Amino acid sequence: CALPISSKQIRAYHVEQPGKVHDSKVFSLMNICKEPVKYFNEHEYLIGDQAYRLTNTTITPYRRSQKLTKDHERFNYHISSKRIAVEHANGVLKSRFQSLTGLRIKVDRARGHEFACQWITACLILYNLLLDRDPWPLEKLQEQSNENTNDECHEEDEGARSKRDSLLKHVLYE
Image (cartoon, rainbow, N blue to C red; front, side, top):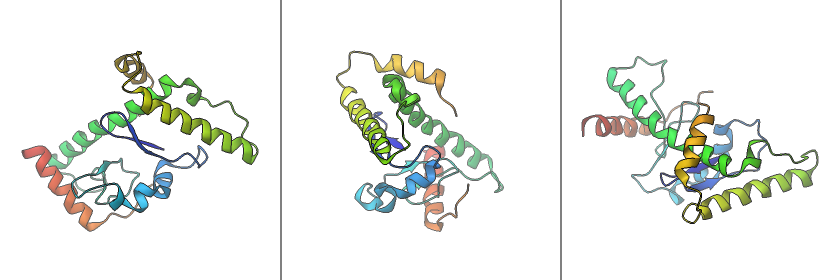
């Protein structure tokens, strides 16, 4: 699970879980989720999809199971379009480091799992280092990742609902 910021830089990552663990479960194990005050000020937040829990630092779309107004639908569309940047950054990462699309490391032992985690971490670090220095244009990688990008519910926090509602007003009316 890698969390890029708008500059496409990876801000946080967690590589210790096997690939079949759901992203929201992996996110719940990360320090950025457990101790958000260390990572966010009052006006900062992540945008997640409906699989994530709505909190003051993770804003999610309004659920389809609720009666959605046109404003709710417009807000959902707006934040979903912003979330695409995360998918693009992941696509650029995998375009730059093709080994991540199908890691060919035998992981049947603890040593193999450890090596796979170290390999992925090295790719993430190199990705960030290359953002400003790589002669291979990021736009070209984005085009390639756009071609390859594939687009459980949790209880919501009442204070976070209020924050999302105020963001809706800000996004749609300001």
